[in-house]
Image 1 (cartoon, rainbow, N blue to C red):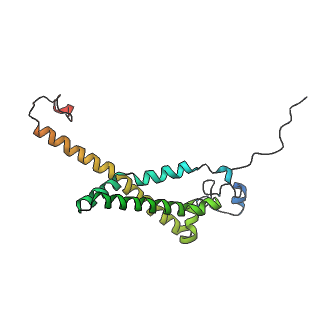
Image 2 (tube, rainbow, N blue to C red; image 1 turned 90 degrees about the vertical axis):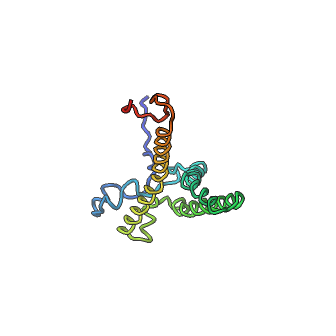
Length: 176
């Protein structure tokens, strides 16, 4: 007996027109592609753990720790700061969940959803602003950490009483 192949084609995880249909209607690939297509429920891979890790990543960052230190510098007590951080974390969780709800219900990603409010070209501006803010937010902790490390190493090098470059934790190999 010959093996018969299944007549059923695999169900795509994305919805929308085919590339041939897009070409027939002269729709630019800048405005529609497979990444921007709505997804079926089977094609969505986010779980509760994914949402939790996104929230935890936004809550636990050097920027937030610097904010907490700033509250200490203003004279707030530990309990006041803890309450402020808990309220902020809960607010962030609520807003992240709210912003993802429409995408969850329809399967449409954020860049396409923003077209509703901003239009096709305005959504590109909104996405660019979102990217610039993300670059600034996530590059400031490494930048401040490297500058504080540089300051610590420089201070240690100049205040060290030993003359051996090997004993300094931040010794420069070119100065040996």
